[in-house]
Length: 378
View 1 (tube, helix red, strand yellow):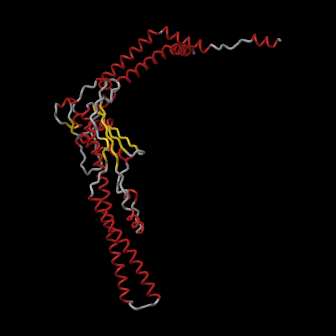
View 2 (cartoon, one colour):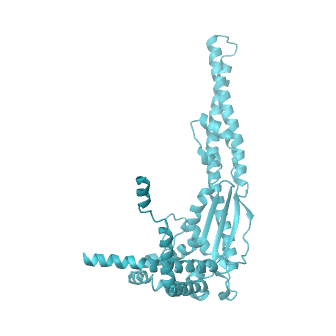
View 3 (spheres, helix red, strand yellow):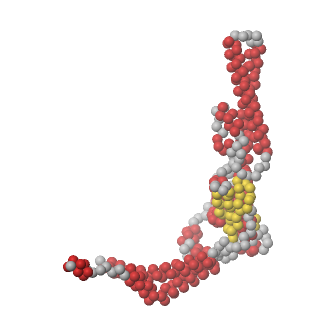
């Protein structure tokens, strides 16, 4: 009987500690409710300012489907294998680029420079047609960006000061690559425009469905669609140029192989005819064996020669054909709704940030003070 009594007298664990702690936290927050509401209101005002003065942006997009090259060089690959030549996968697909390479093409400097020359009309150009490069370099065509200026002269002030101290290279300022150049030079202004344009371009490839999406963001709706359309046309030009170059290389290879095969065929034909003329009526085993060998060489040379003759005609036709490389399945449309700023999301984000910051300060301040007191004592 004593043992149960002892167990009854033992102190029971407090099962309401969590509830008491939660109530205590809520009480602390309730006491500081004015501070929390004030802080949240300040954050909400900041969010409202950001939402109202963030630059407006419209995004236009289009969807294209790359046309995969058909394997029309199967016979040629077999002939090339007999001749000890490997055409490779690029030749097998007639030089068609993989869609996975398209983003790299769009990022290239030559491609971006062509996009810079896209003709557009903006509200502040008064109906005058200007290039995208002129829009980004001439302030009279752009609306004032309040947040951008604030950021530039606050967080970005060190960069502005360092940029003003840098000595500009006059060679870089005037350098402009020729069309045949493989090394390009960008001056400071071109580099800034390049980064701005690249930041506005979005290229996404869907390997599973087999399509590519192109989009461009711009402060006005109509120019956004115009630049997106030029993105598609410029990309198609680059891909088509690459394919044409590979087809011409393919034709040159076939022409050279055809001439070599033609000479081998004529030589084999001459050797066989000469042997038959010189050994007419002979029935010895040696003569028959030699004739069979020459006949076999002639048959092989004729097979290679005839196959290459077919492939030469196919290669010539392929070069002359004007095939569509990119099929436009969803053309760019002038957007009616803004893609940025998303004001509701900005307000909700700043509201949440204000509540979390205020509550964190109220609950964490005593612990921070105790920590400093212990540090001072030590």
